[in-house]
Amino acid sequence: MSGSSAPHLGVAFLAALRRRGGVESHLVLSAGARRSIELEMRVDPAEVERQADVVYDASDVGAPLAAGSFPAMGMVIIPCSMRTLAAVASGDSDNLVSRAASVTLAERRRLVLVTRETPLSYIHVRNMAAATEAGATVLPPIPVFPADFPCIAELLSGLCGKVLDQFSLSPAC
Image (tube, rainbow, N blue to C red; front, side, top):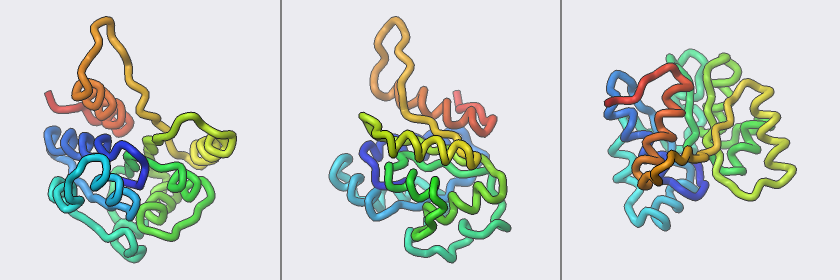
């Protein structure tokens, strides 16, 4: 999770993985993610960390996630700040989130970036294009609105299902 607004997205995704089962979750919270969890969710980031199977410090660029030999289906950055998007697009690996993303792309594994920003500047769009050209999937959290307006929980569930689809994983019933 990077420091974008809406850390609720990442928390909902961790919950979706837990419900689904069979997938071990490895979590990195950037400094910005920690701050947005405190400000927007009004919870201690440690509560979010307890929802993951394994947690790493964002400053530990030598963590197992940063190695190509680490067995992984891929990586999801949810939410993905524009700063993190820029780091991924340019190959800047100054923290574990961007380093693990760089390794994920180098190993030709699935990388999904759930970007959170509006409106988009030309620079944002250019970085999205560069990340896509490098092999990432940019998946903004744009909800699908059925005829009857769903509640926020249903919107989050739908987004999590879209992310799981990127890995050919079905959500839990």
